[in-house]
Length: 207
Length: 207
DNA sequence: AAACTGACTTTTTTACGAATTTGGTCAAAT
DNA sequence: ATTTGACCAAATTCGTAAAAAAGTCAGTTT
Image (cartoon, rainbow over all chains, first blue to last red):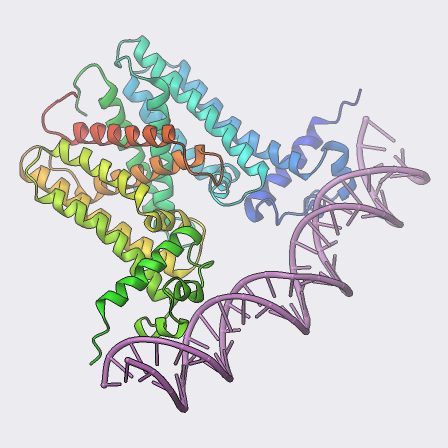
């Protein structure tokens, strides 16, 4: 069975990640990725089935980074309110820094290639599970009322997505959002997390 | 100066509204609108400068319907929590029934024609003012803390938009959302309104 | 004069084949 | 096991001509 050097695999993914981040999926060519690595296009096909698989792995790895961040959060002993705020903060930071994940969630709105839709749908499902787990813990610990986890997780996820989109829209068309706009987006997400945790809390707390 | 029969003006707008609702802006032709009215294309240009103006007036009138609904709400003596819930309900209902307004908010995400962006930007600005007024009233009455109205209004508006989008995405691609999905969307919006009003309330209430 | 029309011009969209680019394969080389 | 250049096939871009739609206007009707 073939072993296929891990080093080479990750080199390819790294080069591809940079290209996808800069140019997106369709405008990145296999030749460009190969040239960035000083190798030939055909070599790429020794390691990956096709361009789509490279893209999938690049995005999946960024998704995984976020997911692991949250899984780490799930293992910590923290008040529910804290967890939700940290979740909001991680989500903000990840979508700011993981360019391909960020681009994906944007593209999924109007690029109809199945890859995009599939990857996005997958990510949403995973995110929902993570939020449900946080709520689960909060209910188990008695911090939260016995709410419908699925319903509230969807509510939280969609609202967070809306906040991100609302900020994107404000920045003029194609330009990156300004630091001020990012700061505002983060503040909104944290505030939403607070509203949310207060709303499902058993105690009647105020921040 | 020309008077231009109001009857004819509104007849044209009504025919155009139906066409735009069914086919969207770009796929609706001036000839179709004229034929629906049993008149000639040239006649339309006697009443309207161009196709874009007809579209603007159609959308503006649907926006106005929603705005007047909310302005009516602003004049009622109701608890802040009630007002926010009714706001959420009106928003849900309006976006479900006013097809061109609904289409606009969808198109604004990926149709780059300036008309679309302009009309959407205008609507968002107006919606923000209305939400701010509701918050204003809540602060004045002592029901709400002295929060940053603009900040919270944006938070509320973007979250509501996110809930709508989250529901749209779940329904498979082009089809209309199922009744069940709509019901869920409405429930989410009402719940968000509750979370929100509890969160900004001076009292520590629970529903 | 206000309301409207058919014929007309201009602008935009569509259709489509050729040219080019790109994705993907493979036998041969290292 | 790994890499490559040559090659094919699929997709994209490009130029352009035909079709369709937007928009104009002199002149007619009411």
